[in-house]
Length: 222
Image (tube, one colour):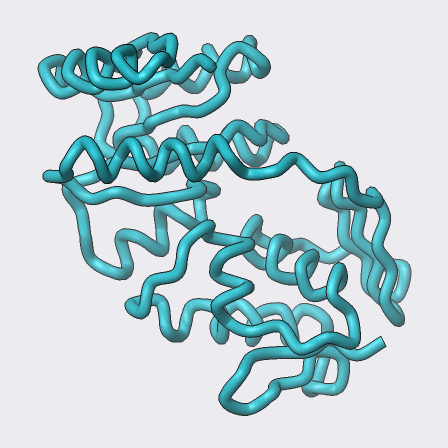
């Protein structure tokens, strides 16, 4: 498997390359955000995973990751950063990063996260999901409510998609974390709730479509 390391700290980038190479991965290094953005957009199938620093010359990692996701790039992204507050994490994950690792870190932890991201199954699932007045295309990410398009952020879309794939079932907050953010962290205690609130507003839903199951999570009612 091939990994792209996007990191402007040359020493750290070289250390990551050495460690990942010893684990059997092929590794390339790019030190500029804009260069990395274009590399992936032009060669979408070249890499199996990107390790992406947040603070980069040319273009910051958050903007780069958001650009990839908006262009339909689905390569797993592990974001690295020295910014470690909850708000910083939310910004990075909302941009489309699959996982988030704060500096300084132990290489074993990075390696474990790399392994976890590369193990994710690529499921064969239907492209069109419909529930009541809602229709979503999971390939084009087009969402319609009562036959009119509505605009969702990437994370709002992922939460809605998961609920629609589990219609009439109770979905826990942990399950939504795992689907949309790929890990569970107690510091994100209200992140899903905020996204549900935004979804309800955009769907003009007064808790009848997306029901709150107190103390557990949510349920989308067909």
